[in-house]
Image (cartoon, rainbow over all chains, first blue to last red):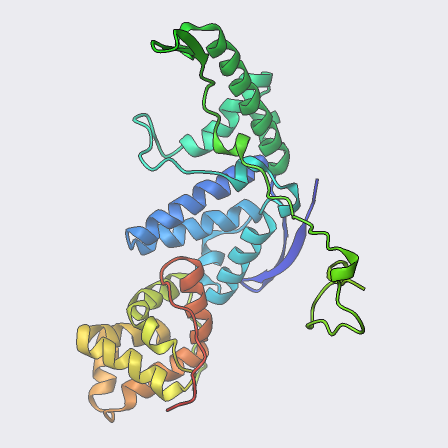
Length: 223
Length: 115
């Protein structure tokens, strides 16, 4: 797993910012949600406090006085570095992230901590690990575990569904029952589009020296 | 004359809130005089008192002190000092910060050079 770190300057001091484990990643997520809430409600205090919480994920020793006295561009640069250093690397290509869909209506039992507690809940329920063990995972490890747990839950639901009567729709015209499978979430069904390679007959290829546009890669050239 | 310190984060957030409504207008040009005209005309038309608040945030002075200072100054003094404040605090970076924090949807566009 990637351990990234970067040096930043804030309030006259140099700080080394390292990538956070899942516990810090979750706190950063909470601070980000609080920041967006502050922007939506035009609450300057909430925006500033959220930025401070974002920086504290990476710099636990950062004092409020240092934060509030530092030039604004140093604070903002540090915030961008913290955000950038704590993203899950794109090459992991988790389907559950690529096709993530936020629930528009929310759930009746929603609360401010839910988005962070749900990580711990899913993994602890499956493996029986403690909160500290789970928070010590790298974020990409946690996403991989959550993805597998949810896939296993879906397979179990499908198995139970296939044993019940509601899975079989009776057609009065044909007098036969047809199995209707359970709907899978989009992240379990969507596949990355494969590139289609078109083969051309040799006698249809252009003759002579071909002038390619700039930037054409070697595998697209016919000669 | 002591050098004026750059704004802290709280002051910068408040300045971003004041200038963001006019960002779609002034981000279309690179010419400083057009940028300042878009900002100051907008503020003086919609909320004239915010022009003093803008300067107070950038110079770390109270609005009362600024009102007394500017009362005896030339008419263009306010615009000059606000312009200097944007120079000290990098207006372009403020606009970028507003965009990344989702406080504004405007980003800098290049001037097409017609004017």
